[in-house]
Image (cartoon, helix red, strand yellow):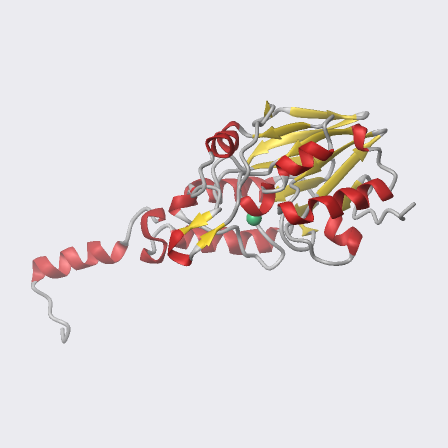
Length: 262
Ligand SMILES: [Zn+2]
């Protein structure tokens, strides 16, 4: 048997387990004989990840859920393959993510970025169970609690497990956030609300979908929230911005007949 390297009690992260980077974080949460996976990453790493899980003595028949934090290709491209290897597991996502995945919406899933010649395979598959705010996923003698945390993407959920939050692409250890992109369904005001909720919660640890886990640090969250509040008024963020104060200033200057030398 392969020794389990628990990141926190009852939580294994597969990159951490393997001590090398597969791709996005792949969280295995277990309780009793049940276990579940949040995000599986790209298709070409699925077999290796499932082999590691088997080697850690988790019976494959005991996987209860295959959960998509959101519909991005780098998180869920491998879900179809994983569900073939784990037929007892129910595929789970937010209704908005289910729609993207079942419609094969390649733009919203970041599988197709024509301007950058990015075009990757995105298998279409069924999401068997939808979850949203307040739902609980029963697991052994405990449960995972669902939070709706949109902003980076529509239909992004986080999962609370005791004092841990599997926090998706809301915030990373360096204060970066998941990409903000209109074609992807990003919503900056919703993003700020999701971050404020995380900041104001009594969750102690954030387990993001990229990079290492870190403390739910008020200052780090505050700096990120303030940065995004600024984004709402910056042309840099195109149609994701709410307004652009320079244009109001320009209106005034045009009406006054101001010239650059004034
Ligand atoms: Zn991501």
